[in-house]
Image (tube, rainbow, N blue to C red; front, side, top):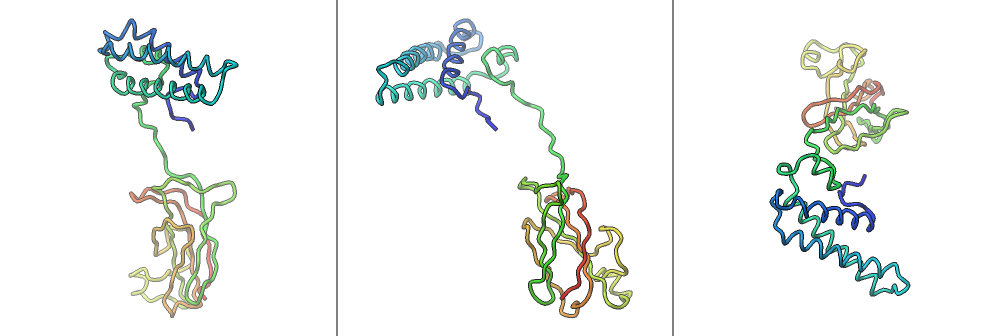
Length: 233
């Protein structure tokens, strides 16, 4: 997306500079712009016009092309300097700003909501007592590339026998198969799309339930992904 306020073409830049000369001859004093800035702009416009005329003539060569690039460089540098030093509101009104061919300053922050993309975990088995998760978007979704967002991986282990009261109080294990991701007992945050969960040795053979969603450092969250499960090798 183009963000530069100058026109992209040389003819457009020259036309904008000519428009500025016309406006500043009437408004420079009211806007508090010293006369030397306007005089220099007029001189640079004339030089650029001559350089552009030579560049499109039959006499065009490498030297003339370089002279044209230098002329436009000097002109646009001076236009940027004038804008930086003297074009602000006030004293310019919104109508003045538009007359100069400039976009109005955007003072209203654009709200950026949390991610709407849904991601899921694909499970593989790198070695004993561990599960490897590859976080991928669901069909019809894509990764959110904003740097402040990472992934919160939720998981819970269901023991092969009923968990003791002490285990459930400390939320080390699930009491039953979870119906909702909120029931998962453990979580951690990562910005990586690949992650490995390491389990205690005595967790081998137990069933682990997992779910992933976007989250940022402030705790804002995206939508839940699907819950998946796998036995711990």
